[in-house]
Length: 111
Length: 113
Image 1 (cartoon, each protein chain N blue to C red):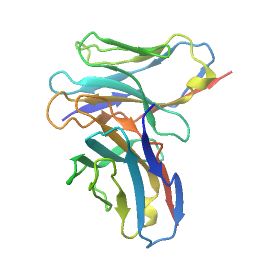
Image 2: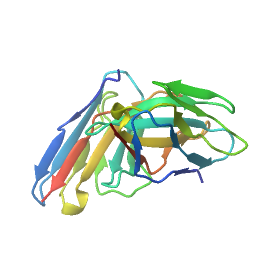
Image 3: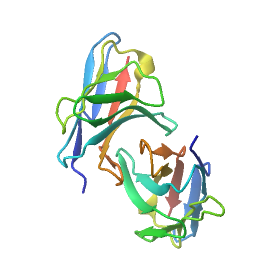
Image 4: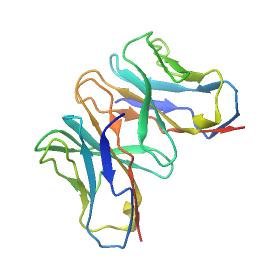
């Protein structure tokens, strides 16, 4: 069983609030990823990291930002949430040449 | 670029029916191929994988064979159960370069008793 955690699992907030979605893994994986999942299920890579102090933007442009100060921690921040940010956010991690392990996701609703 | 085309859903089957979810891909070289499953309210879990042509991945009664000649990786199960109701994603990962996964759009499967 994969040891990758996301908090909170559900978040409902008002427009303009700053939020941070937490993602932690205890497997020592170098690579970590953030995906945004549409209500229609499609997954979009929005950020990834290949190690400490490494962050890259993914295939889908996002107003969120990420940081990777520690191997096990890859938080995602929205400085000013808007209704268009309402979505499910999935965090994942992997090691070289192996599959990605996913967290349970955070379902964000911005009113 | 890389792409994955997956059978559109939703798919509804009766319990014990035979399941096929089609997946074809476009990629350079010989990518690794995966099927992930997402149960309601959860993240994705790896169901099975294949890393080279003619490999067969299998798990929990599901199977998929890496067919290079048809660039396909169809998911099959001989007798589905209600507990198999979930969303299934086909994905590929190139075996060189940045190793990012490319996902299909997902297929929602509902099994009725």
